[in-house]
Image (cartoon, rainbow, N blue to C red; front, side, top):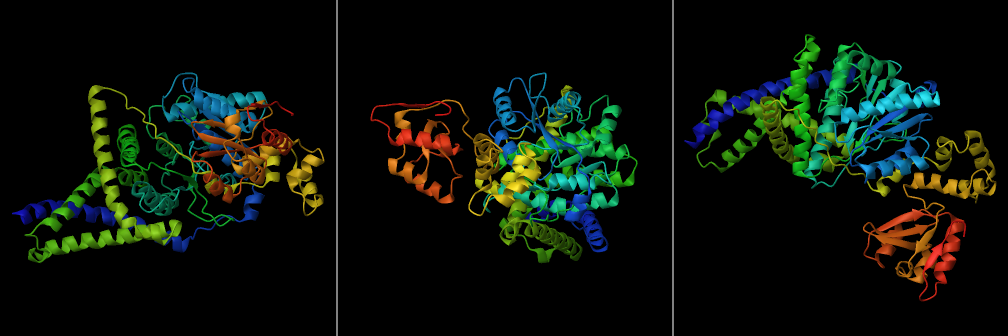
Amino acid sequence: MATSWIVAISVPVAVYLILSGIDDLVVDFLWWWHSIVHPACAPSSEDLDRTAPRRIAIFVPLWHEHQVIEQMLSHNLAAIEYPCYTIFAGVYPNDPATREAVERAAARMPDVRVCPVPHPGPTSKADCLNWIYQQMLVDEEQSGVRYELVITHDAEDIIHPQALRWINFYMNDADFVQIPVLALKTPLLALTHGIYCDEFAEMHTRDLSVRSAMGAFVPSAGVGTGYSRRALEALAEHDSNQIFIPGALTEDYENGLRLHHLGFRQKFVPILKSANGSFLATREYFPQSFWSSVRQRTRWVTGIALQSWARNGWCNDWKTRYWLWRDRKGLIGSPLGLVTNALFIAICCSKNWSGTSLPVSLRALFAATAALGVYRIMFRMGCVMRVYGGSMAAMAPVRIVWGNWINGLATIQAVGSYVSARVRGQALSWRKTAHEYPSRAALLGQSLRLGEILVQNRLLDRQTIEYALANKGEFLRLGEYLVRTGAITEQQMYEALGLQQQLPVIGAGPLSIPRKVARALPIHFIRDWKVIPFAIDNQGLHVCTPEPPPHQLHSQLARHTRLPVRFHLMPTSRFEALSAEVLDLRPLAGLSLAAGD
């Protein structure tokens, strides 16, 4: 009896899996063929240098991002290797913490603009982006500068140092350029986040490359997407000044389809290595808990498979229709993934199951299904190995099973909420994903040299930096030489150093240190390691230092305090004065240093 119901369910599931597997094989064949006939090559440094830099506006919509946005801005402004760009950050009036974080960043970084949305949030990412665009127009009127390209990013993004140069290069032949998006590597047992590593490695290796090569529409990934000004103005004219559809849950996907319908050429940049040996891609963390991933994917399925279907139908172009089918077939395939998992468990637990007792036709059907499944796993493992290495690839089969549960539940939830909203005549609600940003140690390898940061922040020109490098001598550092010669102030040098090192810099205002805080570390430790504790709050112990903290300092501090330690840079002259006060602190005295002491 158990065998009969297992077979009854397995046959239609197997038929669908074979049809879907053949569909995937078609895309695989096209990818292999294009890879052989037209192998992708990274643009050379000469190609990039020959392309005149267009002025770029980077749009970053924000809602409750105060914990990550300041670090994101600091890191990317210190890492991006491009001469002319500005970051426009959209903030809501009822999110003061995020606005204050952006304003602090803008005070230190001339290439950051605060873009207030005129109404309370959260609305939708698309609505925020539309208001950022309007603020960019105001900025153009006030500055007389025109932005020729717009790139969209999120608050958790690590922008590759060469990304803007590549987008600028590919914009010679396109009006829409999408660079790859890859999840940051996490531990092997972080199964939920590992699913994003697997899926994006495969999709951005194969699917998007084939779409671009076929001349089909390329959906925006929401981040790392470059638009020409011409394309944005066409979107605004076509849809009543709505560059991004406010009611769309996946406005990025919609924009790729809209621009394709308007006849603009689109380009997806394959996963290739840049001059520094790293893959050119936008990197970020994705949700790491099961239910946060289900929530995010519910929004994706609702927007891409359901809402877009209602808005756009199936279209007349066969290429577009085919890729719409592939984008929407998960409505069937994802729930069937849950059924497949359940059938496998049922077969393993059934005492009466014997594959050899089945008719030859059914055995052939199940064997074909298994063969396609094994091939699909091997293909994904190859994509993952290329980006993340063998250990991550070895765990991909386990993550596929885990991913079936997440995608299946997300699809069921998406269909349920969509049908409920349509029946009740309600608008679909936008659910924001919580973001986190990598640690300072993980980001330092991408930072620019100090001289490049000084040039990008318009404190010095390139000729002055080159002269200083040639004349500073072997034992004097660039920043020290520039301060000694009066080219910049010590505070300006430290602000640039803070951007490079991803560390906040203590300003010129008064600094009051309670006695018990100043004694949070032993005197000999303060003297030997040149660190002074100056505050304790819910973030931990704040210490200032005139030098970027070496790695071994972290382990040494752990011997003296259990609090998390937050480092701040302090200009040398001020640190020396403060150090003299702290080391000579009388038993019951407090300490207050005003600026310039």
